Image 1 (spheres, helix red, strand yellow):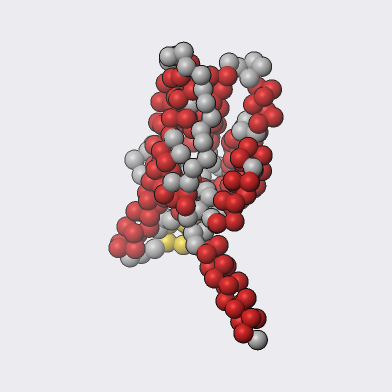
Image 2 (cartoon, helix red, strand yellow):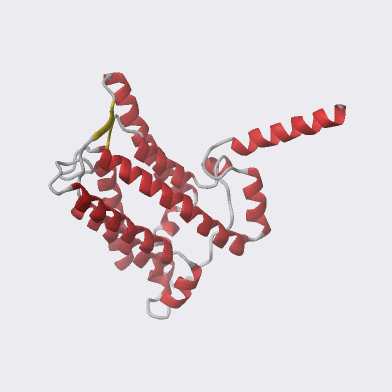
Length: 251
């Protein structure tokens, strides 16, 4: 029940996040009417984002997990992580301070629709990517399910299905697409998109170190064949190097 409740809270939070960023069908969103002075709003918003970033990163590290499971039963470690991450996001939605001020505004209805659909496409990439690598393991349901049935948990094997053949972090790519694709870019939205993108680029470094430690040479080889965020970058580099090598050989 703990695992299921944690998952339900996560999924409701994820759905609200889509409305929060796209300003669609939620009572309070990223561009609600400003209520506070600019300096105060920036300080509060930065603090809220920092709380989420610290929780998300620190609790994901293997060393923390090893210490944490001395107090929290291992089968619910992931569910607890998911629950606390969701609560940090709920706090952000609740206490977010809109800023106001428009950076850009797209007038064309067609272009506005395209940008809105692109944002939703980004969230779709995120959700699909979780299922590609095992959605239920990522959010703790597989762990509690195995424990409930008396089976031993086994870590997932290393795979690179679909999106993962083209980029190493499609989850982060999806979020970046979702956060930056907007017909109206306000100061608050720009601050949110910039800060979250910066966090994701930093978080990738820590995650990849953990993945190399866990999977070893397999992940090192994967890093050489798939770009980090932007699809096809590695292939273009390889073609360029191949062309340069061929040119040198001809000379």
